[in-house]
Each structure stands twice: as structure tokens, then as C-alpha cells.
Image 1: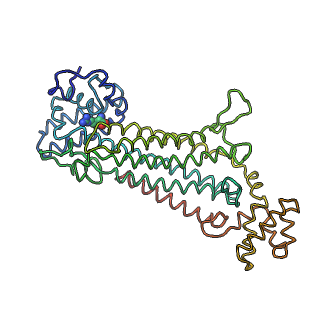
Image 2: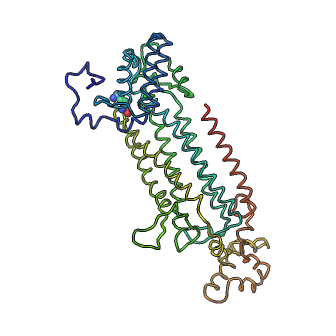
Length: 464
Ligand code: ARG
């Protein structure tokens, strides 16, 4: 059994209870690539400032490569003394190359773990953005494939005014562009190297944190070592971005649950993306959409859990900070799976455009457009609202159909009743950003341009 990192100072070994609570290896081993990369940069820097001989550097770098291979292929043997991934890697490197005993010079696990985690977050956020963009393209493709379709728009879940289906789908698409922006922003804040901050106060050795920042591809280095080792804002920022994204997916999921119901019947889900019932043979259930809804709760838990951990922590590193990883890993995994499944579900959905149209063509959905007709003829909107409202009341009271009442009204008449022709309400809406056919075509172009710009931003990040 190997020694603890602090065996010089202690007489007894750690108890089982301490190890079980304290060790983080079971989950932080997924940071092994970042840990090896961080150590390589550190060791390279130590040699350039004269703290390691060239042959020592090369022996350690060779051992680090081997350790990475062992971890990659699953042949790495962990020992009981391996408290976390940092301990495990250093212990094995030192077994392979005695110079490994020098690799922790001027470094603490406090700056090491924060650097590893930042490297990991940067890569993962990039992948999540990639998946969001893919899902946005799926929404756009469905909008294009159903370019003539329209449906009722809702407020209070009551039919309000008809809109083009593309308008509704792109509404979700635009919310996702804000998520992409937030994730880019979290990435930018994460892009700071904290290696060289040491345990908390830096070092009396001639370290060069700019060099390690550069070697690791960070945009800049930390400014204050105390802040560097205690700062987990980048985890909170990332979790907030992921939670908002999950929240948007939950809203879309909820609508798909409603739309797939017998009561709405707006969509039919592909068999590959729905489930059946073990008892009721007729059932086809929208589980993916329901889980998109449900997983948002879990993401909110990840975010609030981390915020509670950070609250009131004194400077600088405290072991509480080890609790940053599990919620972060969970949120990334949850969002990735949800995005992939939703993308498949929405990409294969059939929109029942006749059912949507039938609902949207309900005469009452055109009431606002009728009032607008009167406004165009010079009537104040309040008066127009009252005129149409009275006709709606009469129609509901059985005094005639709304179209008949419109035709017979002195201020309205047959020309106004043209609005009742199928699809007129949605198609005719014309103001910029509105749900009519023509403005939606304009919006579609802008949305696609935004996707291209975001894709380019992503490629630039990947190259940097
Ligand atoms: N496993 C620890 C973490 O994730 C590494 C840092 C330990 N630092 C220390 N001073 N005990 O936070």
C-alpha cells in the first residue's frame, strides 16, 4: 500500500470512514486526460525555469504518457492510497520514473484540480454547443418541411391567434440561441489558467504561470492566487447556462406531450422515439418529451446544490469545493442525453397539419384580425374591440355563426369576412417579427444566419 501525500507529518494512517468520505477518485477519474495534460505543462515549465534537468523532464513526460495510455486502455491499477485522480497519476509516474518525485514542485492539488476542471469544462461546453446547434438545425428543417402549416397560437393555453408553424418552432429555436450565447460566455470565463497559484499564495520558486497557461491553450492566467484556488464561478456559470438550456428543453418537451395527446393530435411521434405500455395495448407514450420536462428539475438541483456549497466559504480552498464535480458532471451528462434524444424525436415527428389548421381556422381565432379590419377603416381600437366582442357574444349565445354575423354587420360585411377563408388569419399577419407567412420567411433567414455565425464562433473556439 502506498503512503498518503502527508505521511511525513502523520504517525497513523487514515481510517476507513475518513477515506470513504474524503476520496473523490470514483468520480474525478474522468479528469485523467486533463490531469496528465496539466502535469505535462507544469513539468515543461519547471524545466525551462531550471527547476528540473532536461533528462528529468523527459523521464517524467515519458511516464505521464504511459500513465495516460494505461488509463485510456483500462489497464491502470489503482491503489487504496489513491485519494483522487491527481494522487493516482503522481503515484504511478513516480513508480515509473523516480524523477516523478519532483513533479509536484511549486504546485498544490488546489491549483491542479481547478486547472484540470477548467480544461474539462472548456471541452465539454464546446460539445454541448455543438449539440444545441444541431438541434436548432433540426427545428429549422422541420419549419422548412412544413412551411405552409399553421396552428393556433396560445396564451393561458387558450387559443389566441393563428400563427405559422415555423413561427412556433423557431420561437424555441431563438431561445436556444440565447443558451448558446450563455454557454459561450461561460466558456470565456472558464478560459483562465490557475496553475501556478500553488496551495493559495503562489511560490517562492521562479514559476512561470504565463507559460503553463500558454502551453495548455488558456486565453490568460489568474491575477490573484487566493482568488484562483477558491474561485468556482466558472462551474456556477456553466451550471446556470446548462440549467437554462434544460429549462427551455422542458418547455418544448411539455408542448410535445400536449401536442401528442389525443386531445390535441397535432403531432405523431415516430415509433423509435416513443414507448408503449405494458398493460394498455393502444398506448404510445412521449417518454422523451416527458423526460426533457423532468430532467430540468434535476438540473435546477445541480445548480442550487453548487450555489449552496459555495455560499459563505472563506478564502481560499476548502474541501467543500470537492463537491463541485458531481453536479457539474451530472448536468453535462443530463443535457447531452436529453439533447440527443429530443433531436431524434423532433427530427422524426409528423406534424398533423390538417388537425392544426382545423383548430386555427376556428372563426373565433380571427377576432383580433376583425378588430384590425375596423381599425384600418379608422375606428379606434377600443371601439373595434367592443364591436367584435359583441358579435362573439352573440355567436356564442346561438344568434348565428360568427361569419354570418360579420357579413351582416354594417361596419364589416362580406369583405371583412374574407378573413375566415382557411389560413388567412395566420398568413396575412405582416408586422416584422410576427407569425405571418412573409415575416416568418424573413425571420427564417435571420435565424439561419445566426446559426451560421454561432457555428463559426464554435469552430474558432475549437481551433484556439
Ligand atoms: N480532490 C480534491 C478536490 O477535488 C483535490 C484538491 C485537494 N486539496 C487539498 N488541499 N486536500 O477538490
